[in-house]
Amino acid sequence: MWQSRPTKQLLIVNVYDLIQQNQYLHGFGFGAYHSGVEIMGEEYSFGYCTGGTGVSGAEPKSAVGCTFRESIVIAEIETTAADVRDLIDQMSREYHGETYHPIRRNCNHFSNDFCSRLARKTIPPWINRLATVGSYFQCFLPQNLNPNVTYDNNTNTEGNGSMPPPMQHIRPVSFPGMGRSLQDDGEGGSQSSSSSSSSRETRSDEANLIRERAAH
Image 1 (cartoon, helix red, strand yellow):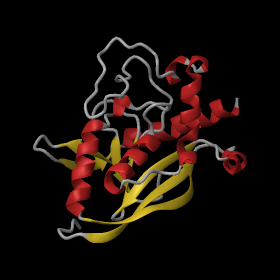
Image 2 (cartoon, helix red, strand yellow):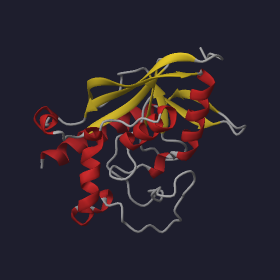
Image 3 (cartoon, helix red, strand yellow):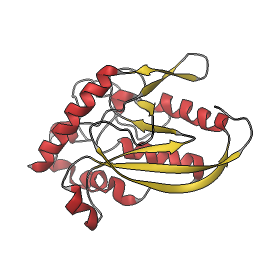
């Protein structure tokens, strides 16, 4: 239920393993991870999809296609349900599904941005270290992972000047969002729609692809 008065809430990041090799890499502060932000009993994450927002809401610790690792408390804050909803509405408009990129704009970037805006805190660096390191070796990346790939369509910079262009010509290796997709209702807010079955199907397939590429 959306509350009108400020209450103390835990801002939590739920972290998931994308590959089995994390059991060895995690000790070195490395690995391939998915994350979602939990607040007021809902977990929000960002993933690739064609058309509409890439932000979705789901039951905490229920991400499909990966293995739950741990929950990390980022902060205890005083906030209202309306403030949380306003932030989700804004970020749903900014984080379009086709702007997902595994190196420059992935689920962990979203989680970090969410925590920064709501609590002025950031997620632990190791969660997104793989993408951070990958950004320094762009010339060695395959085309669909290279953030410097040139696209024919114009760059969408709504809400973020560094947002990469929509990926209409190249389907990136991504970790799609799942659960209730948050779509703009055209009246200044957004509403939760029903679960996307196609997102659930592609999520598992592409998570497997990530594991295969990591194995090589």
